[in-house]
Length: 371
Image (cartoon, rainbow, N blue to C red; front, top):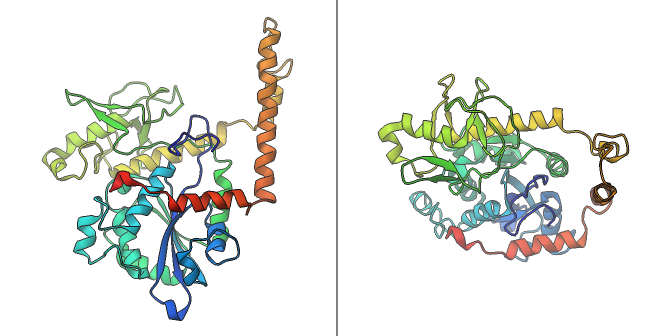
């Protein structure tokens, strides 16, 4: 897919996509207590496939028709992250991240009741690595809301964005993902490396913020520059390098850090500026919200590319070679071509067969790295 590497991770400069896991339940009284967990990049289209309105729905759900989607978990920054969540949600006893907690609560790989799947979803949102991510849960029915409230108390982290939604709201979320210019970052356990001397440094897996001159790190005092990803505080607005904030959390935790599930990603800690306690997920969410606000204010419309690349525009220069100007022209036309393709997809070809085949392939992909 355009803008992504082989693992489905976001490439520099690409728009963040929409990756989600979902829970579908049967509305047939004879199939009461049956559910299905899946992955998709387009929940409305996927629900239509499960109900037989479109081709390529999962074979298992043909016996559940009519069915309804009651939970959607999104906010994953790569396809791999979402597929790992789906695998653990389907196989809680097989997945190492969920095995112990699932067995303690009587949840098995064969559990298909909506209540058990809801309990497992809430449990997973509070386990590493997912509790460190800025995930969103869309609840699509009042009955589902009742189940969520029953199992989420004291389990789901406060930074998880839980919303009572409709499928129309979800469709808007999918559409917005095509034009959202906010950057996506992986703040998972591969994103931070610990050197032999205990120094915590960002690895190549942690994307740069791409914003220079945005103040100084509240922990180390150095400038927040491109090449160093930042997290933040939602209370005072302070920002810090991700590695510096992680080190600050571990230092303040002391012996308590030995009980944490990860030796690389901290659970929680105080803001280095205002000392307000927050979880690592809240620190990531605060920085992401800031990037989105600044992106909305500072990103120029695509239409201005033509002005910048035209004679007299921002790129115009008396000593610019003709060859350099020629290189700019194809990029402008390709941008317009891509915009037209996206517009046609959104307005007319939303349920195209090619995208449907992609979802079918995604259903069959095995994610062995979490087992």
